[in-house]
View 1 (tube, helix red, strand yellow):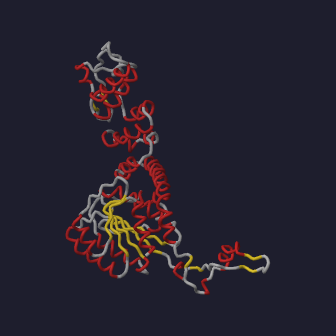
View 2 (spheres, helix red, strand yellow):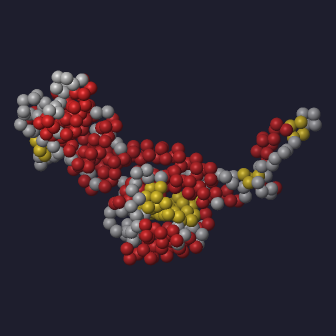
Amino acid sequence: MPDLTIEQRKTLSRWRLVLGESAESHGITLEGDDEQAARVEALIGFLYGDGGGGERGNDGSAQPQQSRGRGIGRGPGHTMTVPRWVDEVAQLFPREAKEVMERELVNRRGLKELLQSPELLERVEPNKELMKTLLTHRDLLNEKTRSLARKIVEKVVQELKEKLKVVVEPVLIGAIRRDKHSPRRVVRNLDLKRTIRRNLHNYDEKTQKLLVDRLYFYGAEKKNRPWHIVVVVDQSGSMLDSAIYSTVMAAIFARLPAVRTNLVLYDTEVVDLSEHVKEPVDVLMNVQLGGGNDTPRALRYATQLIREPARSIVVLISDFYEGELEKQMVRHIREMCAAGIRMIGLGALGYDARPEYNKSAAAKCRKAGMDILSCTPEKLAEAMARIIRG
């Protein structure tokens, strides 16, 4: 292809990597640095099952193909394994591409090797997809990789928590503190210090008197009555994304002023993890994914935790697939709403969680008095703030 420009040759090389070896029969070949292009081809072939990666061996390695004389590193000395693949991807790709390829690795190749090799797990970039894989396949972890997995979960959760705090805390704290100072003119609630401070600009030096044009009062006893938030999370495998966000959100709620928070996880049994609510890593490392679910039982338990219904919010994260228990679920929601408890039902919570839930059952829950949402953490915070503000 002597008449092609350098840029055109680079473009054809990229297409060659995308299309694989069969493209060479149509004149689309690798150009430029043969060695580096071959390394990239081997990595992509290993990931997607054809091309430079060759066939797969029983140990998860890619078996070498017969060298075709192009000097592109396909000989016996270049057998690709998962650990080597991780190292070479780190060398050849920027971080963003590396994370994408590692997610594909987890989904497609060498899952067991990844989860049981401490030296490999240490080199993988922590990200939410990797965390989900570790939580889903926790039983494959050995003692050493379990410790590393916890560190990965901790790092991802901390990054997620810091991100959510920025958008969630101001909304809810603003709602909680709205009544800190009240316009009600009750003498015993007079905030004398604030009243003086805010009126100092009216001080008359001649008469040595402070002219007060506005009085400030504390809110009544309401400020001493905390809000109670109960987060109830379905542990179904399909709800993993939502469970992650729900757990982190519960940890944020638990650190708000004048808020008491309970965290309840359930399948066919109910587990109260409220004592760990401020430690989302502990909660996530104990999530038992899959199995059936009994939402009515979880709601009954949540009701037992509530002391003041009018200042309580129950956030239920569920796919609402209850089968024969659906009528019981709707009845419990109706009873809780009638008692004055504010109910929020989430079919999904997160930025990319799929809202795959039983819309028919959710519609019945809405009719019973529950607010049904499928939303981002920000929208959940806004919905709760509206409830708190009244």
